Length: 561
Figure 1 (cartoon, rainbow, N blue to C red):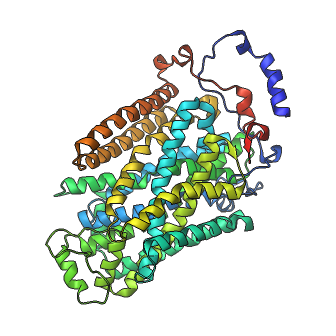
Figure 2: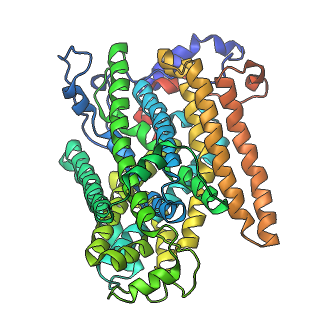
Figure 3: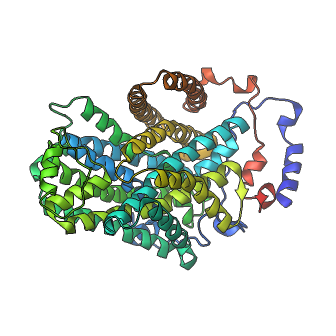
């Protein structure tokens, strides 16, 4: 255990041994210098790193961009999961084209946050969960892990059930929801081992699924022929004429659906797949540049696909009533019994009803192509969600398990509640569950956004790549805005529970929740330069030794199984 022995030697000479308190509560993280210099017998994602062309001297190189292409597109899949697609179609059906500017703004904010995540992974050689494990003391670290796991479970439930709904639509109801969940679990296990055949092949497979989504939802867009002028107006005019509480809630829901907490952890890990010499400042700076370009392109593609869905339902079903849809469906052979009550209330749609409505108005082909798009969205996001679960668990708990054990555990944690829902819930009545899951994920956002801003603002961790004043102020304002929007969404949901007991329970949970968010915010403010709050060393916050941080991949310091 050479690293530990070296640590003992260094600690003997350390000035901290004489009882002096550490002036900075956060430990400096010296990143692994180069993949060639590390002995990494354990890998969390792949068993190879993509080499970057080293003999290209241009300011911009397509060869280098191609080498860096992959992590951003895997990250962008979270912007295309079934939860996002459902938010899109509800936005179109409830508000027409009027909320496209909210979708655009949320995507831009998402890009800025993903930039921070990618920079943390590139500069430190560690992903966000690993940095949290090294910087927070034990109790906050465990709480943070639980909160992020809840977000992953909520997202995974939507994704797996989205796949099951797609299979149900494609089979005309012959595959029940529970069977679709089991099929999704099985094929996810199969697809997750594609990286055994090469990391680039795995990334190509994800690219194929994104292409399927683009073609499927693009077909619906061409079929419906939305008004292009209204699309552009909705995208670039930040105004919502005649909008009420329903549209406001939908706008808040768009932000919550687009910016997902586990995706920050995921992206910070995916960028570790490229071979970068972290001792070379030029290479690190170049990697940050190309990863940002790739993320921009990937999120632009995801934004276009989301626009396709919003525009289709805005053009075809905005202000439609249940009676209108029922009358149209009665003239077709599309199964729709019990979906649309005989009343003049505004049409309420989800990804299942959305497919049925498309089939009723535009023919069976529209329904089946819609289902194929949902299946691609659900399958791809389920796979990336599994990777998120592995990174988060390994990073926070510092576990080093076999590949099969990792996949089995992370799948089981998320799939068990999903399977129970599938068994006891009807495919036609999942809207209430989706609302709850959206609220659950909204509540977890601070547990990704606050840590990522905290650690990317610290020079002890990021060295020369720490956030400047602009990013500190701008990032803090953006995160405060996003968290405030999502908390509004949570409050609106709780207000609809209509139960005194649930109100009391929500109040008690809120106190504990706000205390923990306040703790993380305090750390963040200190990192942002509010030095008057830096009294951590006086109250005995837990500290890790720097030598442990320097040897973050030391096999002997991990739990093996």
